[in-house]
Structure formats: C-alpha cells, structure tokens
Amino acid sequence: MSPYRTHYSKELNQDSDGKEVVVAGWVEDIRNLGSIAFIILRDRQGTLQITTFKKEHPEVFKKLVSLSRESVISVRGICRANEKVRNGYEIIPKDVEILSRAETPLPMGIVDKVNVEMDTRLDNRFLDLRREEVRAIFLIRDKIIDSAREFLRKEGFIEVHTPKIISSASEGGTNLFRIKYFERDAFLAQSPQLYKQMLMATGFDRVYEIGWYFRAEEHNTRRHLNESTAIDVEMAFIENEEDVMKILERMILHICRKIEGMEELSRLGIEITAPSLPLPRIRYDEAIDMIRKKGLEIEWGSDLGSDEERAVGDVMKERGVSFYFITKYPLDAKPFYTMPEGNLSRSFDLFCNGIEIASGSQRIHDHDLLEKRLREDGLDPDDFKAYLKAFRYGMPPHGGFGMGIERLVMSLLNLKNIRECILFPRDRNRLTP
Ligand code: AMO
Image (cartoon, rainbow, N blue to C red; front, top):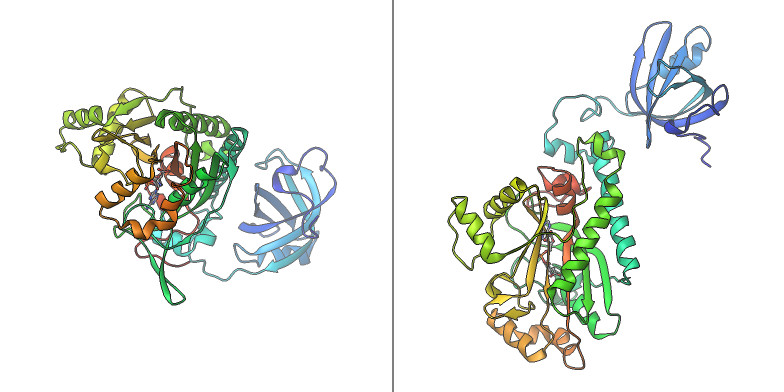
C-alpha cells in the first residue's frame, strides 16, 4: 500500500465513517470562506471533499488554502459522513503533505466549461487527460482491447508480435516511412500483413496481434493518423472470407456487450446497444447503387471516399443499423494479396456509423498467382522474396482482418476527431508531445 493513500475517493463508505484515512490526488478546487475552506481533491476514481476549519487546525488550514490548483497532496484525516457532500463523505484533515506544487497559471483549465482548442489540449495532453470526459475515452478503449483479447483467446487465437522495421511495403508502395537501417534503407511497417500471412505456413493456424501501423498519410484528416493501433487477425483453413467475417462480427458483439454497461459511457452521453448478428452484408455493387441514389456520382471500380462511405452510413442509419459490412470489392480496389473472384475480390470492409473500422479478406495462398498479382500491382516480386518463399512449401487457405482501434473508439463514441482516441497522436504536423 502507498504511504500516501489508504483509500480512493469512491472507497469511502460506512466502514470508513469516523475513522482515520489517508487520501491523495490533485487539488481541483479551493473555496476559502474565511473560517472554513473546502478543497476538492481528485484521484483516479473521482473527487472527494476536504473540509478544513481555521480554528481547529490553523496550520493545516493555511497550508491548504495557499495551494495552487492541480498541486498534488496527501491528506491524513477523519472521514465523516455528510449527506450534503457530493459522494456522501468528507475528510476533516489533520495533516497535509504537499508532494508537488503546480505552477500558475495552468496552460489550460481542467474543470472549466470553456471550450479549449484541440491543439492546446494536445500540447498539454497530460493535463487534458485529467479531465473526466477525456479519461472516459481511454477507460473505454482499455475495455475494448481487453474484451477483444478475451474473445480471441477463447476462440483459440494466440497473440504474436511481428517486426515493425521491415524491408518492403506490406500494403502496396505508397505512404511508407523510410528509415535508415545501418547502411541500408528500411521502412516502418504499414501493417503486420506479410508476417501474419507467413505465420499461416507454420501451423499456428490462428494468430492475432495488437500493434502499430505507421503510414505516411500526407493528408491531415479527422480520420487518419500517421501512427495508429490495430487488432490484426489471421486464420488458416478457411473456406472463404465469410469465415473471417463471422469471427469479426462475433468479436464486435463481444466487445459491445462488455462495454455497454460502463458508467463512462453515460459521462460521454453515449448509449451502446449490442448489434444483432449476422451484421448486414452489402455487396459493393449495391453500395454503389445506394451512393448514386443519394445523388453522388461514383464510377464502378473506384474505392469509396469518405463522402461515399457517409452516404451508405446514412442509408443504414435510416434502417437503424450501426455496424455493417461492404463486401466483394472490385479486385483492383484491393491490395495484391486479396483473393480474386472474377473481376471482384473476396474482401470486405466493416463500417460503424459510416466510418470504416476494419478491412479483411481471404488471401491468395497459391505462390504463382500471388507473384502474378504483385506484378499486376506494379510491385517487384524480388522485393517480396522472403514473403513469397513461405508460399512454396505448404501454405493452407487463409484470411484475416485488421481493425483500427482508434477508428472503432471514434465511431462507437461518436467522436468527431480520431485524435481524441489515441494518447499522443502523430499527424502531418504533430510530432510532440
Ligand atoms: P487497411 O489498410 O484497410 O487494411 O487498414 C485496416 C484498418 O486500420 C485502420 N487504419 C487507420 N486508422 C487510422 N489512421 C490510419 N492512417 C489508418 N490506416 C488504417 C482502419 C482500417 O480499416 N492488412 C490490411 C488488413 C487485413 O486485410 O488484414 C490492412 O491494413 O480502421
């Protein structure tokens, strides 16, 4: 147990009433009424009130009222039930230890209701993360990852970690970050794609990775990061992409069920209802019709941009659906490793409220076809030798998906900017903090 704390704010209850406790945290507010002062102390669970009387403990009173907001203190005192206080208990302090004094003025407010610019918030992220509604996002994010892991393990997937410094593109040639690797050039991995596929030639059969994507996206949009995280899954001996979609939709259901009762959701004013399965599957062709009916022009074969995705999202919303797949994209709109089906592909994207949150497919497992597709995509098979080799000595049919964690958090929580969903975002302009 910490010498600075015996109880968190929410742990104060009938048992602690009348007893000595030690609490610790950040000074959120000080109200000095002259002979009595109220200090609101914040810890990881919430806030509590410290009530100090000048007459009884003049030294303690003085110390507390002279503190700057956001200083860190540890307080020993008697816990007392008081129904007028927000969580029913207050602390009458006997001793205060100042652990760290906060400078003034603060670069941004913590509890003030004024709107702070996104850039100011991100420049001062350690302060921003003291705000209840910002913390809520990351507590929900944590639960999402925990429940995905729980689901995948139960389904027989093992967790793996693959290299992030790589020698060739995994998602095609563009948006790679080039780095120096001693006397050679290397790249930061756009995704674990090539490695998770190679692992299908090992007999592990079902793997997942929770890791980083690095993408040199030039555009500074609300939905793109240059460093993002994802849950990647790969599974062998599948019949087609349906087998993969079934795992993905069940994972989504499991996640929704695990988070739907979280009190952090109400703090964000969000309600989540677990979707019913199977999720709707809209073929690319049908999606194109929907988009045209919404008055947008789109050529068959082209990838869906954010406006087009939103148009389909609007139609689905009218039908009361948040999660849905778009399937069977044109082959040319998908990466080289995707299994062809005529001029279409055995591929899918998963959407939540009009935002793409995951992509996946059945993959090509035939070496020669894969080499041919690489060439057709303008890539040089020589750059993919180590990857291609894994297809020459026994590679089962397989497929998988990658789901962006920030995208899922953003769409589930109805947040307008993906930067809200990652602690320290990297975008076109931001490299610190
Ligand atoms: P894709 O390129 O569609 O597919 O990426 C998968 C998912 O990752 C998320 N994502 C991003 N999130 C934020 N910022 C970005 N710049 C960004 N790029 C991608 C999205 C997207 O749906 N290898 C395949 C997956 C597979 O088939 O297994 C892949 O990377 O949510």
